Image (cartoon, rainbow, N blue to C red):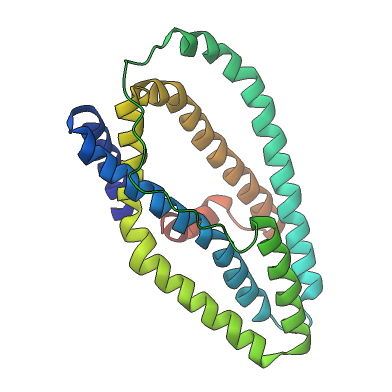
Length: 237
């Protein structure tokens, strides 16, 4: 919850700086946003690789069938949720298009970073996901101790990077994003256009969660609302 408040504060700070601060000050924040963004996108594939590999490698040796079923259910759920979201968006978004077309951004200036640095990821997200399953299942099957220690230590390093660098600085990154939009005169257009879309996404998100927990509750013979209540602390964390 504290992180959410910091992110909201970052949005407000970015908008204020983009609208009222001198351009040189806003460009400093935009420069930070550009550099931090490179680090963020560099880290995401590593996070996927080490966290998923470490989690799968810790499973018992005979858990491959259970993991396969879980993965299959996850992909079926993802596809079903994606189709539902597409159908609802196809019905709702066209109704919002006329209102979005009437919005006009104020005249602004396109500020660019003082310094640009390209830090390409070691591999793509899908490559990281594939590697995580291959090595995770391989380690779980062969009990490769050295590789399991490598994945666990890699996970700890990425977790340290997240807790000490990325999460504390994330509000400043968000501030940079909104400062750049505010300086360009597009921030209010963006907020008005996508605010309703965000609300719709949250409503669909919770509708799908409730659907899944109702199905799981019926299958397990337990109250789905009790299951959801037990899940909430982990969800908000």
